[in-house]
View 1: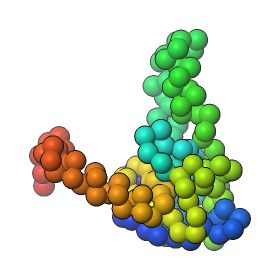
View 2 (view 1 turned 90 degrees about the horizontal axis):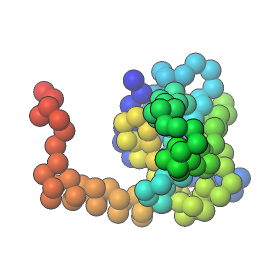
View 3 (view 1 turned 120 degrees about the horizontal axis):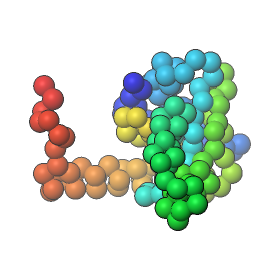
View 4 (view 1 turned 120 degrees about the vertical axis):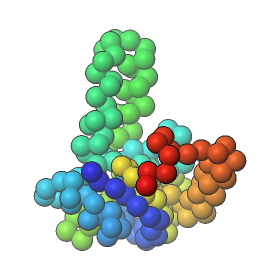
Length: 153
């Protein structure tokens, strides 16, 4: 299973291209054969872009099939998942082009931060990424959050 780990800073060029961090490219290559294919979408919770391996995004959408195609629940979830999602392929240097409007959504300029979240990753504006990491650590600590099953050791 693909694991995106760590926090990496890369440069966004004037054409909207950014290099996927090498450890993330390696994780994607183990998941996919051929060019690295991702689904990018604006997060519905945070001012960032989410990067999903295509297979993980397809699995995310599976439960949607259980909803009545014409129900409000299906319609709202389908819009949330698909309307802003764009499949992208990396070039031979491991760069992707951010779809139009995504950089603005996440307030990205020259430097961007890739944050690994296990199965997916996020692309953030650097100061917003640091605030998010600090807030998440504090919330987890103050709420005493742990993973099911204990330490896992």
